[in-house]
Length: 104
Image (cartoon, rainbow, N blue to C red; front, side, top):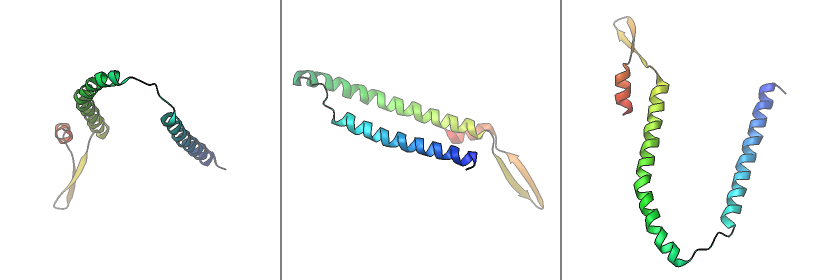
């Protein structure tokens, strides 16, 4: 077997092991009995948790989305567009500001 094939085989087996193990762990965790709480503790803690999620969720999603778009913009670097002018083919670079505006 070639070294590249054996490396891919090891990665494939590891990926299957992680996926199967993760599924097993998720099922075991879901079926395990959790700590019991009184009804009074649940009724007082729930509104604060819901309010915290309502406030934090859009901010977290916005930050993750903005960070992702920024990394995509940084990864592109430069874009060159071919342009025909008669029999000549001219390659022009798209300005970085235009790429940034497209990202935003």
